[in-house]
Length: 265
Ligand code: PXP
Image (cartoon, rainbow, N blue to C red; front, top):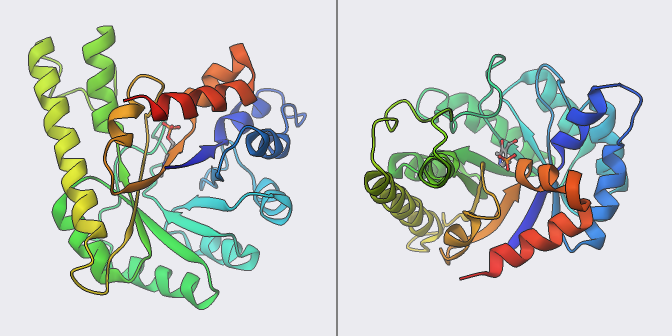
């Protein structure tokens, strides 16, 4: 199982003073030393953490493959084409959200997504689509000619959090707020099963359109092992929990500990 370390929140911390401290580029080399397989970053439309120059510098100097999350934004797509990173993950984006709240609505944006995939493909850049674990979305992704999907694990992560910590404040909690611990557990197992089924459909080689299947969002040291037990998922992209822990134990150790958590069964 590969681990992509999302370093957006190194830049979030940097923005507190805007004196390039901590420097996101330094995180790339620490992540490599710690055994990460990939660097992931999100160039948001509002540039709230990662900036254009960060992306350029990191793509040009990273010893690890760089996966950049991007909205369907013409200006950002053009810029990323000029940098030719290893992979682009297309994500939905809302200005007012705290973090990426759901997967791409492929049905509504089918034509635009297809054009953007083609644009990246013509530059030799692989693409992945960040989608909710819904079978219809996986079937649409298979039609679109992307190389991979990343399944949104946020709902699963929120259910784990609510069950384990009594926290009712998570973004996806509206419908689940009233549930008992047992009901939350059942919903969590159901959600995991949906993720597993989507991973199977995505990677099935019944025809030539088999995709690679990744997962991410809200994964932490407590909930990651169950996702790792899904054999069709080959890569996780994890940010917030690693960067949060790094404040106390250092980035290198936080990444090593995540690897250990990924291996626990
Ligand atoms: N994957 C995608 C597509 C994301 O948008 C994000 C958040 O930027 C992540 C993974 C990482 O999520 P988290 O920071 O909750 O680990």
